[in-house]
Length: 180
Image 1 (cartoon, rainbow, N blue to C red):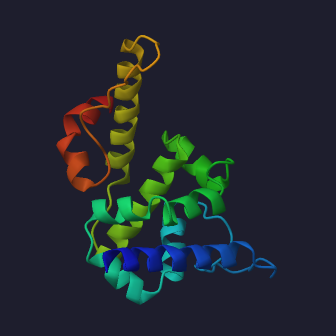
Image 2: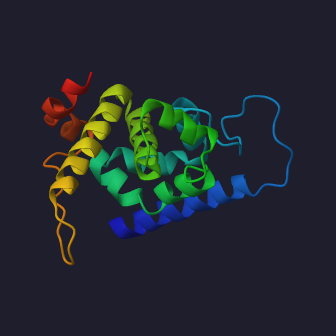
Image 3: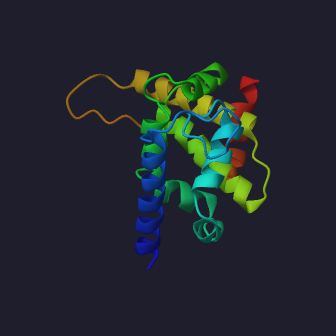
């Protein structure tokens, strides 16, 4: 049952994003939350998702934990966000994130999906903590990578913390708080 929900959610959202992105209509002159334009910032991105994802699906998403939601939609909705909103190509949304220090499109779409989850749950989203945690994870990842001698079959260890949801961000606070 859960897989059917995920497939329906991802399929519906992809169809909505695709139809908005391929629309032949001229761009709207007023601020339209369902605009087919690439969002300018995180608030704009969340507004567009709120508009494009039907209330019934939002109610289903509310039942999931943040970690479950972000993991379930990474290759569906997350991929649509990365591709349709130009996160690989340096769109204005990608530049917005890069200015904050978020470099990878996977991280950008993850932040958008987490912020959307927080919005529909009515929970505050700490963008600063999420960004700082992600930067600390990248730094630790590079440090660990530098310790590995390049050779066939070399295994690069992952950092011992993550930044996928509020809980993991707070549990890893000691790693990113020093990067103030």
